[in-house]
Image (cartoon, rainbow, N blue to C red; front, side, top):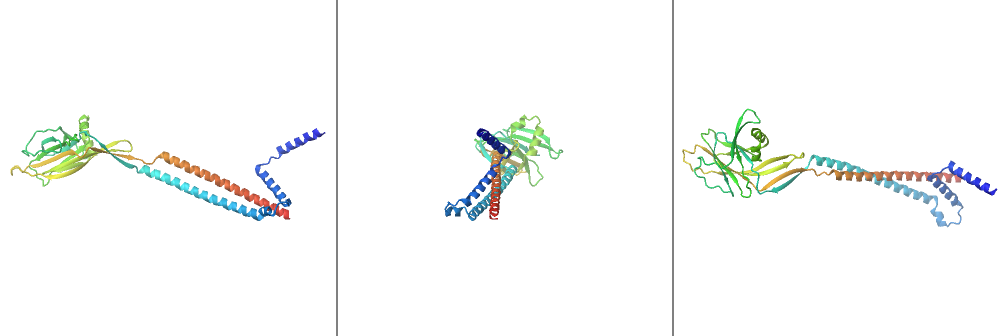
Length: 353
């Protein structure tokens, strides 16, 4: 009989556990109810413990916990606002850096430049001489105004003006200096007969490589492209114009490279010692040389790093996620404490009644 009763009690217990599963919160409420029921009957506790477990002390602790939770929620809301502002500012700075890359300037020292091309448009002026000199030394002129031996590599080319497509242009192409360490220079002389103008000048332009001009299949098209891409300058008659060139290479964002000449010019008065009968011809003197052995290389660099921005955004979103998770848990905890307080208060009122 005893075994049958024991087996029957085990079956009833298992059926009760299967039919009435309770969650953790219900068990905690039952524990709290049991504690509340035991507290009035515990006469053996000292007065200090009874004062600690009094309703007023429990209410003050609950208020402090609630206030502290609210403060934490406000702090994390503030952190979330700062994180959102940081994300916005980071994205804005990244877009601005993409629109405005930083210009990087470097100088490359060379011993020998590639010989540039000098395109001169003399018009009615005639070339008297073209000479190469070293170490910036130009000997005194003898028999100025007379034809002399040409020491330069020159070539004459005719092509149509790329802007008007009507005017025929006559250009004299001269190979420029290349020995930068020896301060090589090119000295040219022109003269113009019976000019009717008060002022006279000869146009010229510079392009980066004389070798590319010689090797091009269509030299006419090459000169038209040079005139469209490079600026032209002038040197006037009656003076010696000293042109010091410097080369600037620019790398664009798409990887293409462009070459630009920068020059400094100085003009020196020419003392004409010719006879009065010969001074009717206008004389032109021009000197071309390299300014220094440095090639200036310019490249646009985007300082915005997408990987650093992605890492920063990941960190910010992680902080936002943690803050939202903590705020959600804090709200749940406050709601749970509030429910417990209301249940306790209701039980106390029922007990009193």
